[in-house]
Amino acid sequence: MNDIRTLFVMVIACWFVAGCSMLGFSNIKTKEEYELTSEQKLYEAAQNSIRSGNYSVGIERLQAIETHFPFGQFAEQAQLELIYAYFMKSDFEGAKVAAERFVELHPKHPHADYAFYMKGLASYEQDRGFFDRFLGSPQASRDVSNAEQAFIEFNDLLQNYPNSLYAKDAKARMIHLRNIMAEHELLVAQYYLENDVWVAAANRAAGIVEDFPSSSSVPVALAIVVEANYKLGLTKPANDALRVLALNFPNYADFDARGNLVLRDAANAQNRSLTNILSFGLLDRPRLPPPLEIGVTDIPQTAEAPPSRDR
Image (tube, rainbow, N blue to C red; front, side):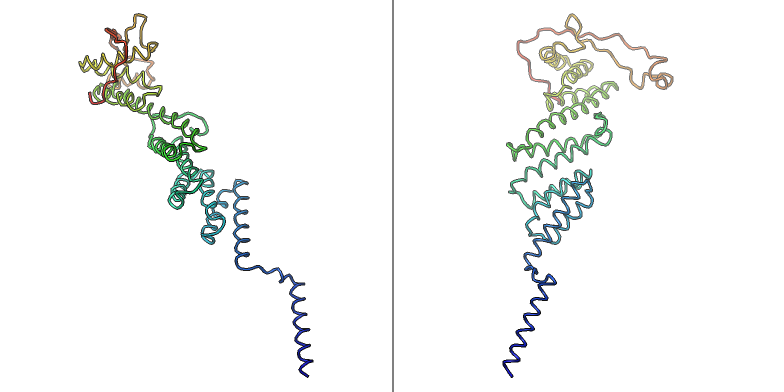
């Protein structure tokens, strides 16, 4: 009787195993295998979303990897790609936050330089604005705080990763940013000059020469230093700046054939009538004083240091 019972149990067991095999239960994975497969599928789905340009869904899936598999195989890569997805979505603030978080969590990661670079690039794009990105027309008159921030962040990349794959591009963008910041300062200096605020004009222009010596705004800035100090009666700093201008930019547009610097007063708001303003300067033009000529005398063989902004 026992033999029959044993045989019956064995038959039932064989039948159960065969049934499981037919139903596909023989392929049940371990917990680790199941989690790996789920994480991988989620990562692949995120990749597909990003490749198709559906960045919002891609971001959600990358965040899901962080939430459900914080120590998984794709967790760090998901955090890195989250920066890119935010950037491509034009959520530049989100990209910067994701980049900062990645650097904080993984300061020694082999691709941490990418996070540094993307942080600067996000600030760079924030600075350009909508119309600049599509029309390519930077406006130096606008707020340049994002440009300054991008410059700092690109410089952080170069300081920490001088041999980074992204170093060359960062340097090129820093040159552009330096020119934008210099142009902005130049507009401010010109505004002060046109409104007879000569001390502020001289200081602002001197700052351009000191802080952005390789920018294209330097010759105009030097001319402003000359004019502002000349009108203040400060002949030495005016002559110092004039010598530097003549030596380094002998073909400056406002030098005449004799080498004199010709200064033409612009009409400021106080000198213009309502008719002149409404006609965009075509009617009722204000009388302006004749051009002022400043001669270059006793030019030394080597240029002197630019005048200090404190003068």
